[in-house]
Image (cartoon, rainbow, N blue to C red; front, top):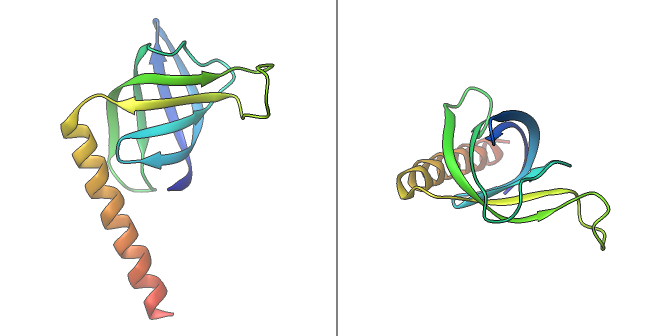
Length: 108
């Protein structure tokens, strides 16, 4: 799902704010010029939509594109959520959000 949500990730004792632009039940793309290396474990906090509960999950960096890397990729990182319970909670919220959007579209 394409999104534009604020995310805060913590890695190596620092906290950084970034924008997540792609969200799935199992992971997230975070646009950042300061991505930790692939394989790193971090903690990330975000809300799926305004008013939803804040998710604070542990994730693993699957891949990272840094500014200046070859190719036209947006700098950032692909992360995978590590807890099955977190994945289930995010998936349920994404499904409920999609159902609400479908219902609103049908009313128009």
